Image (cartoon, rainbow, N blue to C red; front, side, top):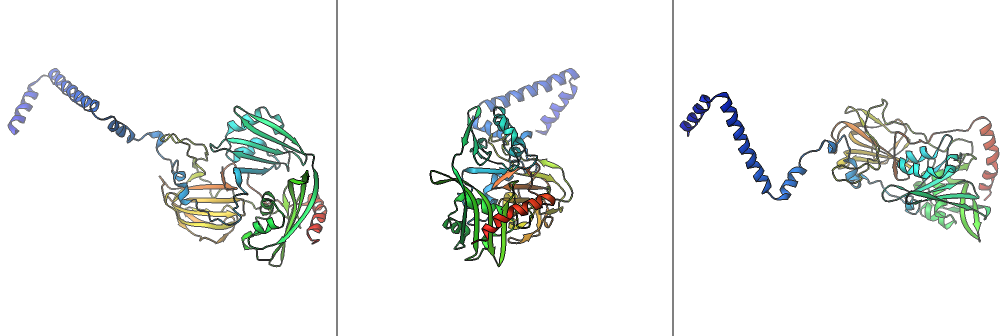
Length: 437
């Protein structure tokens, strides 16, 4: 064999340059036909298997793109309590009270509504450009994440509903002709707050309004048996039935202390001193602002599976060990390792809001612990299913993720000057009624 190899090598070296090139080309041509025959006679599924294992640059993960959300159910384990009543959050309805500077577009966009849906709704409904401070809007999305219906409560006597119809939204104007009356309802805690409030005559939406108004000042899960509560609603009655209502004020007594929430003309609630009941948030969970490596996208298409796989938060690239801060006051619900999300911290802020921090290196808090805005809760890392050091941060409102970068954050707004004097005078009547029983 060795002698044969030597003879072949000798013949090759005695060939001219042109002859060598022709020989090499002929050899490559034979090899090509051999490979072609092999592929043509191989089962089709082997070819598909071969192609499927070739990585595509469009499908390579960037930090947590297409990763965090695939195992959502494995780490989305926010503890339930009786206030997470399914009736309160039924039909995937979101709500918003119009504040100064709000437009329909800015409000819906911060909740992740697609810009095409916003444009479709606005196109033939110019009245929606004239939203006023204190008005309320409610909307529903369908299973595909598209806007299905929007309700605009223009005033006590007028409501406009916009329903999706193929390529447009149909407006229905409802003019209320009922009788509005004040209703003072009171009760004592017997079991949980929802059942106690229902026994006192409140309906589901009214209970939700009470919980929302006092969510920052009172932990409804820690109310004691026989704690009294007093509510004042303006109710509209049509044919003797309660058609809709508006919370004017609430007073709950717990631990010997009075907790008030009184509605002002701006649609917001304040306590008996005119101090805001809202809680402010930090925009970013770090002292330094880091680069966004992957943005919020509730309708992102996975190029591999061709399925919608939402990215429900924002990824910030940062060195391992960067201090992560609580963006608002709240209670730690989850602080542990959770598989794909790595080390995870979830904070509940009142009843409406929660934040999530993923892929952490070291946890600095425990479940049940109270934290203040700006407190250190963890050090950043790259744990779980991650392609590099970063933080995945989510901001949720009413159990729905919103864009943390653009969402209009609640702010602490205390009344001052003439606005405070007007509120104190206006609220005296409401407080007197709440104290009359």
